[in-house]
Length: 132
Image 1 (cartoon, helix red, strand yellow):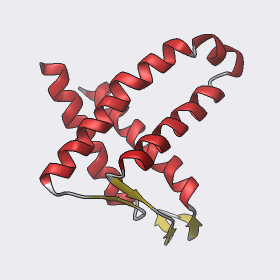
Image 2 (cartoon, helix red, strand yellow; image 1 turned 90 degrees about the vertical axis):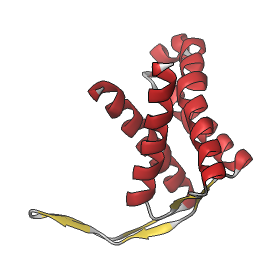
Image 3 (tube, helix red, strand yellow; image 1 turned 120 degrees about the vertical axis):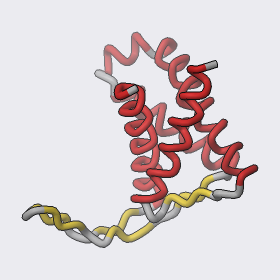
């Protein structure tokens, strides 16, 4: 029960944090829809991805993880487009200046934003799992 609760909380935090920094990643925070979205993301990251890692293990060794990254991106895209609980669209990143490091403004298209959203959710969930 503890693992399931952590899984749902990590998925909710990942959705919320990704929607904060990514202006093209819109989450509907209506309670019913948000809970369905959390359950879908948790199911995806804690059930579908581990099973696909086991199935793709030999191919993953041969391609050094490239094929599995592509498969995760495609699975995330199918989950997002099929269930349409999260809206992902193109957006303009306005740039960033942090202590002398300057990141210029850039247009991020739809496919790139799906990849960034998938990467962000995965990264946040993995960081939270390492911390706790």
